[in-house]
Image 1 (tube, rainbow, N blue to C red):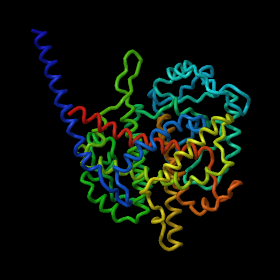
Image 2 (image 1 turned 45 degrees about the vertical axis):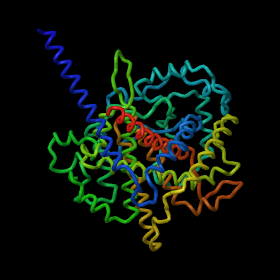
Image 3 (image 1 turned 45 degrees about the horizontal axis):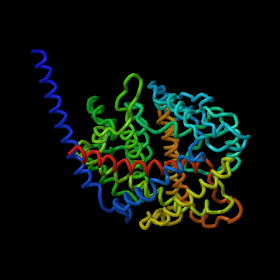
Length: 479
């Protein structure tokens, strides 16, 4: 009798699973139907971006991110939140710093003199052991003394000036180099009120929005009960969103662009988490992969009341902005004396060749965003608006120090700095045009940290669009 009941339960469970998969398979159609055509505020269509990213950008940017110059990012994860009392760091082990023992640091970093690197060893055993030590995503911050001295050499190439971001003081004893390849961006379990407060502060206080207008599905909006706040845990208004979009469409172009950039960044981060999700853990061995249900929860037009496709379009808009910045900054790197310095002459030359190849591709894209349409009014008003734009974004970069999860803080700071660098480039056209061919320019400089953030942030956007296509295929297979 009990076995019969067990069989019945298994049959019912199997039927339920089949029904859910069938429903999931039919969900992509409305998303796909709405995620098409020309984007607002520019003359580029989504399909062209998909093709360009898949065949031109994605393969090359992935290789670039593996180069030594671009994989090490110096960051201070201990800066206190400047806006509210610290409510403690995430206690989930995925969020914590777990230094990789020096004996496990790749030999290509440890070997050589103070400013030289030896060729990377073919033996990947140490890398695998190091990854095992970091298997749950803990920050790997241990580098050999030789590597640290080489990074000091890099710092001599840097120059400071006014920025769109609050930059970390690289001389701080709390600043540390992190190997981004050993600390991939993925789901850590960090969520709830602490995470909501960060994004709520970004949107409600820094996106030129009046307090009386709420973003659709905002979990911290007034009049929501606890249950609804928990249910709408991702898209921080009013559920129909009409008053919000009436307000948004009435903004000037510059403020509309600002909102779309922040929304696009938010979407990109959440796509990464959906694509690199902890699916299960057996005997301490985690399995990471695509979480289709989480993707549906965050982007399905029915579950998000139409918000998912709207926000995915903002991802494409952000991609266009950073793509345009890369095409504009190419002359800075094309000068012969500009090196991606690591101390390894061969690797440095190969890295620059690959970077210039990517720049050629970005310049070949035929439907770039026209940044000249921004701040095009009277000079006094345009200057004031640009400064307001810069200060709002700089404030958002400071909010990243309020993120309670170290892994999330790392990638939030990097991607915010990358976007800030892109904006700095777009608004420095004259300075870039007047760069001297054979000497540094006082008018426009990029620090190594800005370069690393810019290319890695764009790499994250490229990956997001690629993962969006992967989710499309996964949903089609469940039909």
